[in-house]
Amino acid sequence: MTGKFLKKTYGIEGIPAVRAHYNEWAASYDAEVAENGYATPARCAAALKAGSLPPEAPILDMGCGTGLGGLALRAEGFTTLDGTDLSPGMLAEARARGIYRHLFPATEGAPDIPTGAYRAVSAIGVIGSGAAPASLLDTCLGLLDPGGYFVFSFNDHTLAMPEFTDHVARWETAGTVRILVEEHGPHLPGLDMNSTVYLLEKN
Image (cartoon, rainbow, N blue to C red):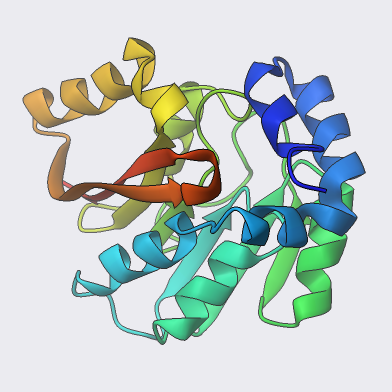
């Protein structure tokens, strides 16, 4: 099974192709990433735990997939999770876990969510090559009031693409965010791939 979908992921472009890929992969996703030691969800959840977010604070799991990020957040004690994803197949897998308060389909534009409805947004393994574009960074941060937290990751493929890392650097330079965590570490050890986990606080 290893590599059946995972190694195809990083060359995919465009929302329809991404949706189709993850729909096809949904039933076997957990097993395939587990075979490769998927470490980023636990690292992101631990980074968010290092902030001052109360455990009952509402969190939006953006690009929630099958819910692995939600499981990691639950393991760190966070209890109020909503999730959204482009792939109906992935959402069905997440729903079966029973860990989310609400699950809803993602749209191609900005979600119809009032600013400040969530105290934190997570985008774990979501933004970058073969997944969501850099514009999703602005969408996620825009959902937060000042003091809100944004936890996300860039894998090695994405770290090599300046449009993603430069986006974060511009925010920091402009005083839009404060970087609380920026930690490089394991992502998919089975593929010898790492990721950087970021925790930002919106100013």
